[in-house]
Amino acid sequence: MSSNPSARRALVTGASSGIGAATALALSSAGYEVHGAARREDRLADLSGVIGHHLDVTSDTSVEDLAAQFETLEVLVANAGGAFDAEEVGNASLASWEKAYDVNVLGTVRTIKAFLPALIASGNGHIVIMGSTAGRVVYENGGSYAAAKHALSAVAGTLRLELNGLPVRISEIAPGMVKTDEFAVTRFGGDKEKAAKVYQGVEKPLTAEDIADIVKWTVTLPAHVNIDLLVVRPLAQAAQHKVYRKA
Ligand SMILES: NC(=O)c1ccc[n+]([C@@H]2O[C@H](COP(=O)([O-])OP(=O)(O)OC[C@H]3O[C@@H](n4cnc5c(N)ncnc54)[C@H](OP(=O)(O)O)[C@@H]3O)[C@@H](O)[C@H]2O)c1
Image (tube, helix red, strand yellow):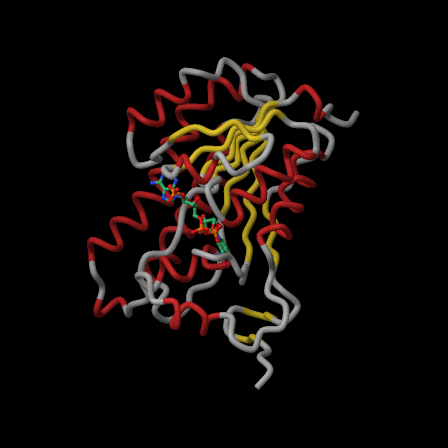
């Protein structure tokens, strides 16, 4: 039996930009009551049909205060995250490694922990973790991000084992190159020129909407169907290091 989207509530973290914003809109258009959360609340107000909430996933109080407003929740898209440097391990800023772990891993675990009772109480819960191909394959200068996303993949696998027998699906989505406005700019500390080089010559990188469609498909499958892991790259990216670029 297909799940009935019209009666379901979804929370998307990191909904103020990129993949999270597109996912919040996609789930809203699919009939979910969508709650979008991030630190920049003004950006959430721009998302038509989405109920905005301030959320800092690195703060216990912020996450717990939001979770207290939900008795039940069907879909949690744990998307808040990012890369904060592009440095060799030998030249690592430990503060940047801590930030990558804090936001991507602890932020996701904190959110899942707080919302798990509501997800179980819904009788048909689904946690979608936004991983990355960096959580499967490492690359030079990507150590802090790859380590965090590998850890996130371990969280997804562990949860699936621990929640076996409970009505909560766990899906990890692992995108490759997605061209969003802020991801690479954040990674390069605001340097837009460096950020633009990431996508240079790549005719069609993935878009935030591509990933939103995948999340929507994953959560609207019948309740007994669990997508464990979905790895998706643009056609031009045959592997982490093999990207076709037009001169
Ligand atoms: N773009 C890619 O190539 C790519 C590929 C694979 C995976 N991903 C993953 O997909 C997710 C979204 O990436 P994106 O490309 O859409 O990047 P983005 O536009 O930079 O989005 C990151 C989102 O995370 C939120 N966020 C960051 N720190 C937060 C915190 N402490 N508390 C709450 N929210 C926080 C940001 O909102 P505020 O700043 O308003 O809080 C923002 O909405 C990330 O987990 C990223 O690692 C991206």
